[in-house]
Image 1 (cartoon, rainbow, N blue to C red):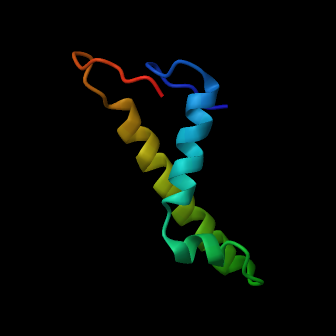
Image 2: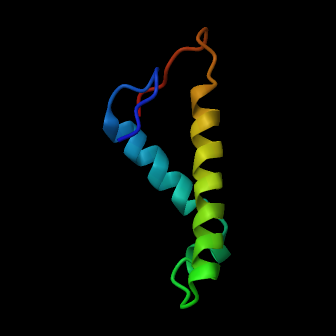
Length: 70
């Protein structure tokens, strides 16, 4: 389970990751089920890059800004 400073609980992280997967390019979500393992690996790598970038962006928040309840 991923847990970053500033995130209240793992449910927040789960929702963030789910949202990032949903916002991934459509071709990645479709091709991840391809028959060819090379194509699947490329799609998985792209999905991982997308999720990692989103998590990195979530870590960079302004400590002066008030938190909004989720």
